[in-house]
Image (cartoon, rainbow, N blue to C red; front, side, top):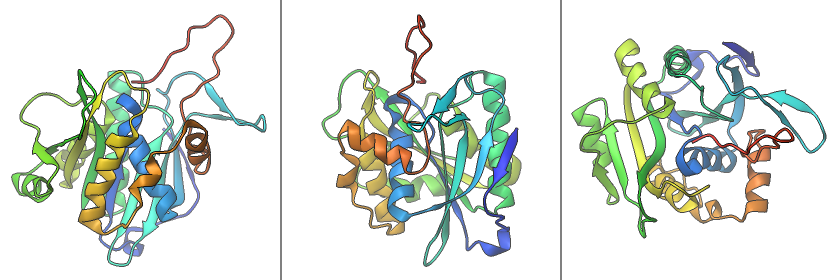
Length: 251
């Protein structure tokens, strides 16, 4: 996996850092939540990551400039502690690629001295929930209790979580002893985007870490959302396909 470093960050420079992950998934729930936090907190890009197992297309900006798909890590220096945010254009395509990518990211968070990894994702339902709940899974019972404290949180009581949003926190625990939690907001699986589900995730983190992020700004129209993603140079997944090809989406 290749990387591009924008700012050399050593672990001694960071104050009790926490990593927050939101990669593309169902209704872009976790990704939209993390992008909102990056923009609102004015977090600074410190690293781009270029996995070999990403989909085989490129992103072309409005200015005609092309780039490969990537993930990015951003740093926010808080008053009491620091936060690293991970999001990206896509997730790896194969199981092997997902495992390699997740181990690589967990290792990076270990090198930064992260004390906790929080992954934001979607809990797929067969309907549109009126008031989305957040299903919580964690690598320890103590951590579970801390996050189930929130009014909107319920226990993820058995099942599987697919993709890097689930793998990264668990690899962090297995290989490096970093505790991890996965927060899954309820959404309808056929939605292209669900700002309401993203909003409840940001609300929980607002309460937990006093971010004071205005969650109402998540509910933006499509035009504003595109500008929103462009601000941090992350693909909004409205891809231009080759002529004659069917349109496809990362889920």
